[in-house]
Image (cartoon, rainbow, N blue to C red; front, side, top):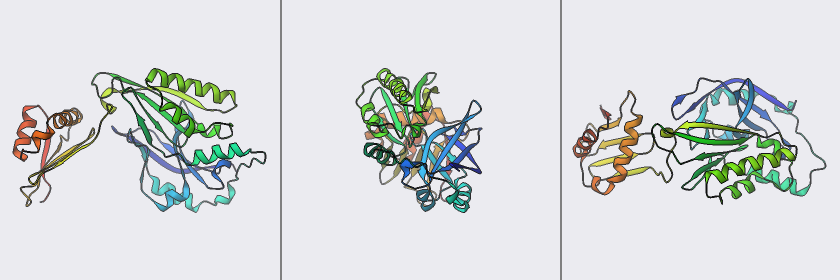
Length: 308
């Protein structure tokens, strides 16, 4: 057989929570993998199974077992249920999966295969105009014009199923991604994606492209960096999806604030902007000063004691 579809179900999620779909894991041994088993994750789109861009050597996953696995770290997109899937993969007789041999493979095609295996899943490039993330078999690009803005939409484009292009000479995902990082605008990046699709299709590769939209508030704005502040009396950890404020003066109770349990996404963004604008001032504040400022700025939070 060329591949084995695992029976174990994978449950997808993203930064908003669980996704109401079922993904699946697939084992294969493509020629460019040099005999290694590849574990890929597929998703249903319009009644057909398509690659998500998540692909890893099975041996690597078995050495680092976790139940959750990120497909795209930038968007917190991943799956749960990996432990069960890996147990099934480990018990399956992998000798039944044939390697697709190519006796006439040229040296430069072998180089393409080497570059392909070396890809870092989730590696991201960003400038002021767009963000690009490359996976094992996909490249996704976001327009950052409306990133972080409420009531706005963010366009994105994904070129996927790049594993079907492994035999295209004088091409590799790494080389293409390097070209992408030299572009200046989303318009140029989008044009690049369609040009790449046209080129690979002309070489006989069955790659695909998809355009989607996300809510602006769900996409991190350009230049975003998590903020951590620690003083003798206060600890703050703020990023685009969560925040923690802890009172270090009270080590008996450790009073702590986190986003409000009901909702809170708007408050997370408000808190991040407030911390970003007032970082120097906050270093001279205590826990009570911070919570008072949060109330004045309309930032809702949930209060609890970390030590019972």
